[in-house]
Length: 141
Image (cartoon, rainbow, N blue to C red):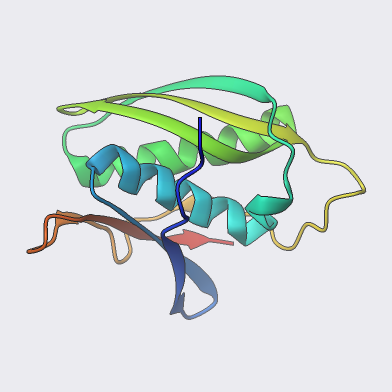
């Protein structure tokens, strides 16, 4: 599977870091937001992602689903000692099933900060006038 061109960014927010993902699909925007989360920790393009982890989330709306998704990734990073660099997300209504591929954290990686949790600050998941989806929130670091 070819990796599409990254379409994520960070945005300033006091001492924390905002993450934003954009894509033609809602699932793709969630994948890009996850890449932005990874980029807080390490350059995603430097990872050799081979180990897959299945993640499922359910929330009452898309915004809370984004927070649950990012917090599930933060949890998996902390408990499995993995850094994820590739994602495949499927969203149906308010349920999400995903696979995150990563590599173990080790001394070869230049890790920067540790994300503590996705927050409701600047939380937004919406479809733009041009049809693109944008998913964003602030991550506590």
